[in-house]
Image (cartoon, rainbow over all chains, first blue to last red; front, side, top):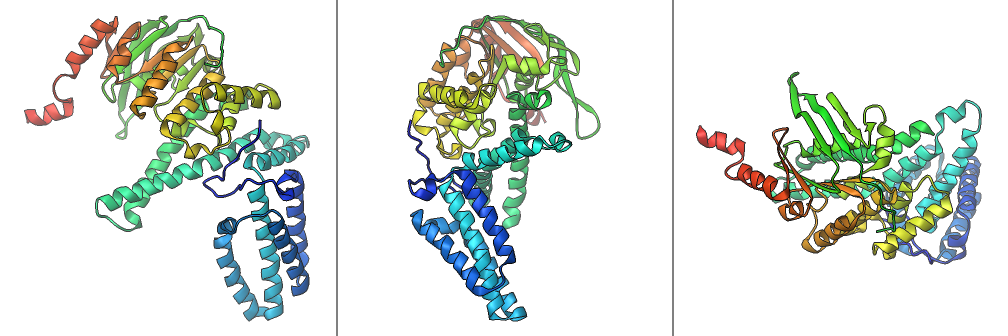
Length: 214
Length: 249
């Protein structure tokens, strides 16, 4: 059966058939980790710009649309602020080096999440944790399945909580009340209610029983 | 649905089981007075006003709540001592699937119920079950983007994937439109499992073999749908107690 995927409300995965999409999730995550390590040691602007160029080429190779850049908008603002501070503190070369290096990592993370289904990323992380769980002592604290469930629950819950917040905001507006105080408390209370019901569902589906007996 | 074998109808027992909780003022509030009840019928409906204790009753049967007095047994297993085995026998379908669905996509959610199987087999079986119920085109769609009816159908599929012997459904069609309500009811009616449904829908309750009426944390009627629902209608005639008290003042 063909695997038809759609972008999640988190805007992470964008289906495609490019070579970057088809690359194994483990390889992409390993390259991302390697890039992050290299960037930590790069101070000069030219090598940093080279890395950014390489990642940008990967973006083009993956044929990702510009809308995929939306997920890094918030970080971009932060990078500009950091760059300005670095310029003031250490000069333009250091600022360009730092901003280009960090931009390369952020863009690479966006490429990985946009070209890799979430469950594949989680599966790779769980495989890594399984290896860690075999280490004496660590095995007692590292439970890969619980980690996978926690990540899945986060991904599942974020859109629900966005809906909860939107509902509370709409209710406040409908009653002519504006400002965050009108919707923050209802959102918080409904979020707690949702958490309680999710806990019941976890219990009812026997997941706690499995965790205790495994 | 899903081609499960017909499980034998077992016995669900409340043996003087009651639930009391500490209220906000340090006192106790009784959610369910000590109740003795034996359910062996294949279709049981539980009806009652909001806050009457219906949901407490089904949560006792699933072992989600343990009784503060008495005992609850499912197929002879005490829910306090054998909670994990009871939850293996019993599936619980919530009114609101939003909290019940734990995974980001339908395929992953159904696969979660099949976690005892090897990965490949789990995926194949989950796909098969979703195709069977008509959700084959939504295997990888984010759960958040499904309609309310599709979510409830998915929640039911996930619960049934674990092949429970008993299904407890807590107002399973309350949030659904007429078309989805009819569809989910038809699926529930066709199940081979013993099904205990909490409902405000008297038409659905009338199709059960036995109806239990709960009011103020007590069972006030229990028997054939005709007799029990007549009692319930009488009980519900007039104003809710809070409004009646206000009018009396």
